[in-house]
Length: 562
Ligand code: SF4
Image (cartoon, rainbow, N blue to C red; front, side, top):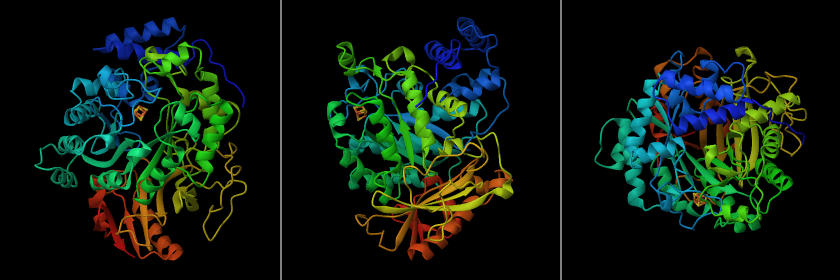
């Protein structure tokens, strides 16, 4: 692993300083923002601070919403065509106790694991942690900066949502859906139903939870209420480390929870925390490689949050006693870069590092833009990231011609089931990838396969994909027979499948790609797996679109016979 140094005046320090200044004293006018920007630029000896467009492009969503109205830009849609709306639950401890690195919680008046200074936490506190007010606030912000928020990706954050009592959970979800619908329904099922035709449709619902609070009963409840993705804190693949930080669950319970989510058709985003007490750089790297490549795991998405010593967490004591040394910037940048370059073709590394203001961090990674620094290192060394996020058509600099895209089907096993990843990509085979069982690029994986080539920057660029699973034999739902397969995700970049296709607003290049991938999936499910029924986990706001493809409600899914 090679190194990178942060130069004086590096944009990361500048940005981090700017972020903290804005969070501490939000500017009320464009002039106030300009004063903050100049002050910080002077402090970091920048000859020229970035212009408005550049500043906007490096801000995270929360800061965009906060200061975007002061920057001179044309109205635009969100890059993925979907407006993320993150809302936070009220302060409440986790059922197992508190992990040693975890800040916040009821005694601090914040949701567990948030310091209260994060933009989403501040917004939640401002609205008394009430779901509907948080959603309305966010929608108002999108509207103020000209973002189209007709397709909402709703994310419920804070503590362990599925560990809360049923009454709280249902009232919280109802509040969010009522706000999107623009009216108050009598019951939660009516509110969900009403969203199928609302102008602000919730096309995805993400719930964060822990392995021990992700039973089949919890998953049934999540499915009933429109959940499409589960974020599961795994944190480490070493039971000793989990014990040391009081995680309250084992590695194998993480495996079983992930398998249940996938079998039920949910997208799975696993969270890992390198740099925990008891780990080493080598071990962190090996665990992340194992998680990405071992057929036990192979998640759809991954969040990597290096362990920080944050004010208020139990870990502070250990750090003060000299019993714990936190990961530094350089180690984190190298680790993240290596992981990005080893990403298998179906993995999206969703997020790297927590959104905790640097003044709350006592020790650990302080660089505000870890991903950007890792990307810079990868480019400098002539390597290439395989993460889907870095190959999305809307994000890459070198865009292949539309005629170059073709359909690739990759087959792999994961969590005791079989998966097909059907994608529309510009041609790039990994050196030792070849046709397998009639699928393009369907070769079985080894750790060494995925060395992405930087010599063909347009190769591997992806415009859309579909994830389909043949569940494991342990599936508990009677709707899912042994001849049933389940589509867990359909994603078209530059727009969202469903609502956008109906309105015909998306670019010509992607028009109809969602329906095309669905047709390929149906044909392949029948021919390859002998399936006679296909189900789709559809966000509530996308159900209508699946209706147009001949799908009807089957339990919490949309489905049809083949
Ligand atoms: S499970 Fe998550 S929120 Fe709960 S204490 Fe542990 S880290 Fe914090």
